[in-house]
Length: 271
Image (tube, rainbow, N blue to C red; front, side, top):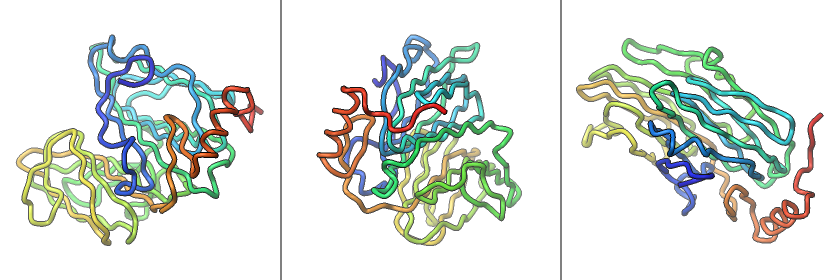
């Protein structure tokens, strides 16, 4: 239960972040009961991180302390860099049958960029290129490069890839990844194999975290499979976490909350 009363599934987060560094949290907010999500996430602060929201069904209304506001709907992405500090709200709405579904990923910022200027990037589904590198393979490129096609979320500090991958039944596909980067897959629909030996079928709401290497191989089972594939450059820095604020030291975290209480939290204001 998060926000003002939103039920969701947490794939990882609020624990030891070393295995998923630089990523801090991944939430799957699939829910078809409006009573379990309409209270939403009223005004709250963030500092030191980026939040990436990808909507599959329904919509999310948002507004922030920089004066930005809007709605992200099915297929859209919001890439928010909190940096030095931002106060915002996110209010989910379902489609006609009540379903509201999507994902929110938190990515850490390195010490050198914790206090950077905040920024919002709303990316519509129409702006996300779809690459078909082989028959039966479909990849939506939110961030990163696939076959020379670059996603619309660019100039991100941790050099991430954020891909929405679909494979038709019994299709196998190998994808290159940067050596040294953290790589994980989160299964959305269907089932598939995420190791070369095809030992275990991985089903929806399951997370696969890879070891280091230069490529990953996936194969759909007897049904098609759809999953998020995410990678990023680990930071290897101390993580001191206080709810929506993530810094490097306890003193920095305490200062952030003191500033939020005394009204000096925001270092950049609407232009």
